[in-house]
Length: 578
Image 1 (cartoon, rainbow, N blue to C red):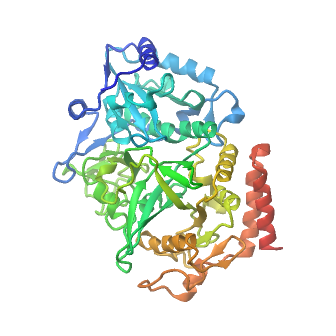
Image 2 (image 1 turned 180 degrees about the vertical axis):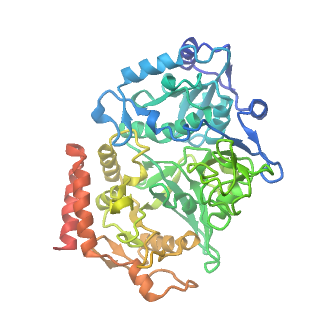
Image 3 (image 1 turned 135 degrees about the horizontal axis):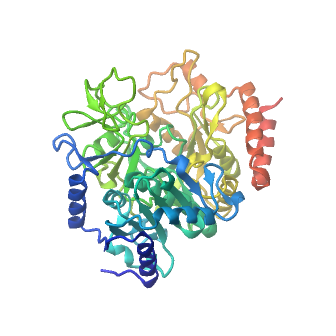
């Protein structure tokens, strides 16, 4: 059993002097410790027990009414405002630390401060990052031990080099509005939250460590942190090929990572390597390798059910912490989009009586779950491979009713990175809501620098993965989806993997290589030929308008935008024509 090094001990002691807890407890990650913290959380109503038959080992977390959306209190703190990410609020490190110090001064009086060591990344992996989180929230510790490898084993090995560790401070405080704040300091590998619910702070810390802080580390060290799913596709003939996928929220990333093959395609299996975050690095073989930094998976509950995502539904059936869900009288949880119809009565996500006639939602729109990855039946045998898995393809998604075809392959790495940066969802009034690479709200560096990092990593590879764009959400004139989605998305993945082997046909379009109508594996799927043509069509007038919108959008990035993007926009204009 390892012990904390001098720098770690000194930092924890410094935190204790500011926060002034009654005692400091170093977490060891043991099962006995988990049971004790869980029991205390239930006794203090920090967690609500669920029915043991319907949700064995599961609990419900309620937050303060305005905590589940912490954006208005969230800040990115770097010295130069121009170095901040392209979304979210900026606050100078000096101002942020001044406010957080004032809010944290004595905030743990009368409480216990837990010092929880953790590691992100598989055991023995060169990707591993070591960290310590101090908090007075038992719930935050329980959430951390699901999402990371927590305990005294974190002290061992090269991950715990002197002075090189992630830092997290989560104090629940007294709830005063003027003392509620969280900030991420990528340059110092620090996440600091004061006055917010421990559960909400823990969810925010997870994104900060795996993506916001990690993207800053990746820029300095020459790798990529991405909000991505990683999955392997096993064919009936044996062998597994790996893909990564990054979509804006609400575009099917989780369901793709846990895809079940349709009945018409027996013998195929999808293995889940990662669901929420991936760290990518060019390997000595010239390929791009991916690891899952996390040990659990967390997602939006809305819409998760046995019909749409049976693997996720099966995984969260036990040993899960739900947040923001409604509580039925029988001790089970419910949310909009659940398999079951709305209950006749329930307690809503704030604990208030609710019926279908109440006029509001029973569950919070951002209701979530957090579950150990070991619960997932489709978990890849290689999810903890120290070197990761080699990627054959990367998918970037969109949600466009008219513009984007079902799938296309980009022409090369530069074109693929540009196409990924164009990702968007349809928004109100016809204006797209752009979310480059699905990272707009998760990146700790300017998005233009993030694009440049992708281009730079591409130059390190002699065998880069091919980059594809997908859009499951194309609609017909009647407003109905043209593609069935869910399990049928495997058909698109099979065409993509065949393209990577040079075995699938394509036809060149202004956007890239698109499958011909007979090129997709559609055996067993009754799809009219005219529907398929509509799914794969590219409308020049629509794309000329889109290109005008893109030029305006990318102009907002100023001189930091890679010059390659200007060339790609000019090339797209030439391919579309006047």
